[in-house]
Length: 319
Image 1 (cartoon, helix red, strand yellow):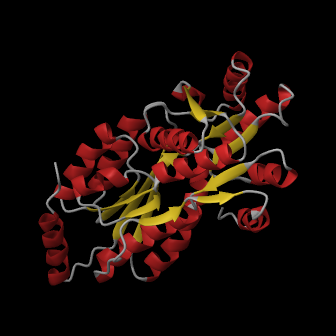
Image 2: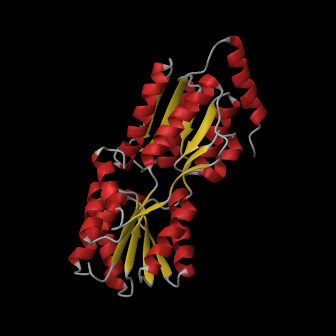
Image 3: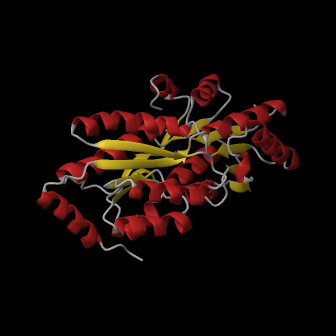
């Protein structure tokens, strides 16, 4: 089903003609327990200063965890609609759950912006734009990079099986590695291990023990790279197993600087939060739109050659 953009345009035109300028938006994200969303929030908070200066409001809504992720996201969408917001900025990780709720919201006159995940779904509910990384291209870049550094068999770890952005990342890693002559082994762990450092470390350790040919691990979240680093270190394989990850943290960058981690893929979450919030509001308030679609904030490979500048961004809470 493709959303009829005429409905959204009519709703916005009616608001403008009546003088009731749409100004209230909700930004929906992942788990409150996931540190990645602090980086998104930094961007949302900075954009909120602009929104509030122009008479609007921003409500930042997160799920409590990932245990009941799809239904929880639908609840947040319905909550935002019930609160009378004029726009919603949201990733679409689980289309089976989210897409019908977003179509219903859009048909009710709510303007949608996609960020972080869901680029392939946005036309179904007439999203204004997508702000984020192309997950597949990011995966290709990561897989190819590790293979070009000498990896022959890469373990790609998915911490929330079925999440479209994570599955797409490992698909890209597989294709990028294959292009450069390496193979990829995908490991999907139970979603209840998401954020569980000890459990994830043990799971990665078990895979490395079971298959001695694995010479690289790529994680899809910075915290998971910490878990993998622990597993690799415990097995005494720091010099023989390369480590890469999507996203960054101070610990990830410190390992890159120290030479115990090979690389990280930065999708610039600060920009995702800032642009999704500010551009949605600007459309509702002033009728402005960006000519470029999608707006890609990544991927960017961070390794020993450019880690110093990334570390400065982390210190400021934006990377």
